[in-house]
Length: 329
Ligand code: GYE
Image (tube, rainbow, N blue to C red; front, side, top):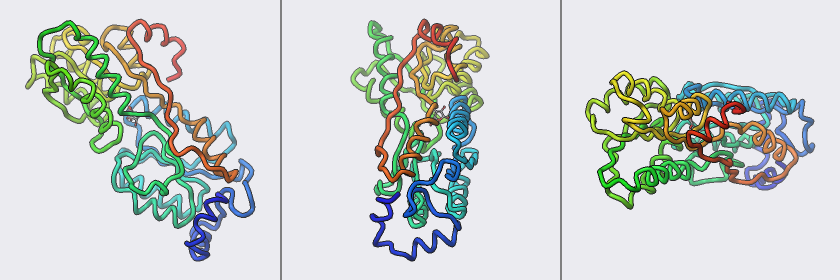
């Protein structure tokens, strides 16, 4: 934060006074230098608990801060942007040292991020991006490359159907509307399959990243598209909901209708090992340790990397069976 203080010289003492009044505390790494871990306070606003991925992400972040001996104030926004904005404002009020959050949607953050900036509280984005043109509104963005994930799913589809001359009708189960992973996973996938017009996305709807949403949307879309060959689900939970809907329609998931999804959480991996899902692109929720590292860097007055991309792989049926016994989440 030392650098930040210099960088914000133009903002002047008034903002520092305001921050002082609001929170009564000094920010990490301020003029007095780094704080000991047990005096650091981080406010984290989580998206919700919509999926197995999210639960694993929350558990991992909470455990990492506990291990580091850093206090973590945690709030669950129940997939509502207004709740996240309230939580962030309250962290600003409390004068926490760092605010971290996983933005439910990409747009609409500039005002509250400017408030954090004015209060001189560094913000770290985890998991999902914001679309702000001003990237000085956050210190670092830690998370996956969702376009790449969508591309990997699309490339698997290309390979799976490479010998087929028939049309391939695809139903897409989208994540939360306006969320970075929903936008980017759709884009990467569309890009991968666009070269061959035998692939047709016949229907695409949001299932809000939940199992119930995936089930409900699949039920409806199978009725309007009884000849669908494949479901591309933006996460495992929606794929698991789709499996229920496919079975309820008297069809065999993974055989009559193939499924490709993203995440690789345990339940998804089990369905893959059982042959009900055909391919999964991994998206790691284990961001806790890296988030602690970023907070420590900020506290030390260092500048964290602006973009930290999570390393991820893909899984076939056999690879899922092999990975399952030691899968953490
Ligand atoms: O894929 C999905 C969750 O933002 C990467 O959010 C995350 C996504 C994840 O609900 O399961």
